[in-house]
Image (cartoon, rainbow, N blue to C red):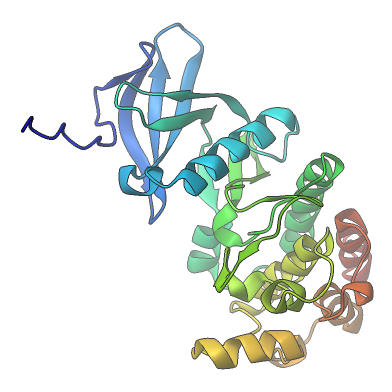
Amino acid sequence: MAPMPPAPTLPTPGSLVEGRYRVEKKLAAGGMGAVFHASDERGEGPVALKYLHPEIAREAEMRRRFRREASILQAVDHPAVVKVRSVGEDDDGLSFMVMELLEGETLHARLEREHQLPVEAVAALLDGIASGLAAVHAHGVLHGDLKPANVFLAEGSGERRVKLVDFGTSKVHGLDRLTRTGEVIGTPIYMPPEILTGDGAIDEGIDIYAMGVLAYQCLAGEPPFLERHPGKLLFQIVMGKAVPLEDARPGLPEKVYAVVRTAMSPKRDGRYAEAPAMAAAFREACGCE
């Protein structure tokens, strides 16, 4: 019996990918894959290479999602959405995408450090997030997993710009759902009831709801739902039983609390119709004109 070929592995520093991308170092790694800093030996500057973990890449569904993410991000050319240059396959048969290299930190890292943010900072964040969401929504795409780890604060020209990243669980509006039988794909604490229950249309409202949760978390320093038991957590979300923001971050204008409540309405028709409308309402409510 012929020996089994070695299992494919992620690249290491010094590896040359596709004959042009020299891997410099690993930037980030998680349960799904890893991102590497690489230099383009054809002179196009530094890039980021995003890979799925080899064991995950064996699954046809995960490869399909990965390539769909790449195609979505190639189509959306907007400063608030991370840009994908191309998608390829290395010598081991592992798919990767070539992305713009971002310098800065995630919103998750900033919240870990600063805990609560000033309302003016939250207003600026929401402006950037809404701009990016409006661009992808215009392409008929929903993000579906908007959370602090997927909001990147990119440094450049002396300022920080919001970049939406990780569209791996995104949804093409009207084609497929963000759930599979018995499984929720994404992060439940940022998901509205219609995703968790499978009851009702899934549209732009799911991202607007997540914007509300993000605004709450940035202001309060913690998410609106604190239950650790999965079943009880889902019940809280579906019933809209969040810890009142007034209790978690007292002293803000009442209109600010109202904007966050509206964005996080358990009922889709109780939320803002579009992401920019939510951002504009928040800016007006806090007097951040």
